[in-house]
Image (cartoon, rainbow, N blue to C red; front, side):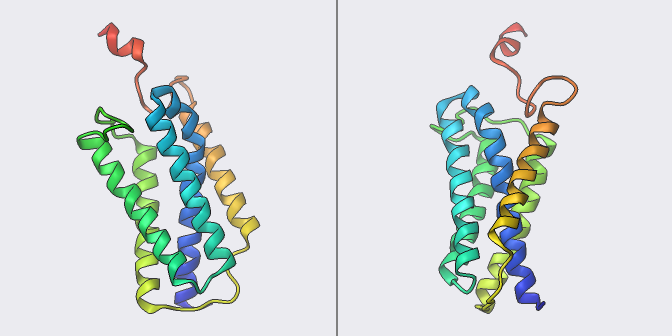
Amino acid sequence: MTGAELRRDAVLVTCAVSAGIHGALAPEHFGEGTGAGVGFVAATAALAAVVVALTLRPASVLALAGAATVLGGLLVAYALATTTGLPLFHPEPESIVALALATKVIEAIGLAAAAVALLERTRRSHPIPLFLTSMIALFSAMVTLAVTTSHTGHTHGHETHHEHHDR
């Protein structure tokens, strides 16, 4: 396996992991508001589309560019969500939690791999099988749900509406 193939596989895996995490957290974000929930569903769908595109057309520069765009967009959106908030999606700044930071590190690795692969414009005839990337996304979702609903029963580090008003 060449370095170019490893970079392409890194993009596939990071997109699958991020899709699983965003998909698992979508219902919770709908609880915070429709905009936040829709944003997480859209992120999941965009990441899944990139995984499928890169699996079916591993030599596609367009698919790599799509991956870089989606991953870069998620990183920028998170930066805004934690500093100023995102109008319509998450108007109030979100608190920073370990799971979100870990997800952003994974996405940054995928973005870097996509950028390098785009620069090299490499071709690969045998990508990671779609079944495997689907299993990675499912596993990521299951781990996310296990982590976010652990000991306290609290999810994703967000306080509820009632907790905020009880202060």
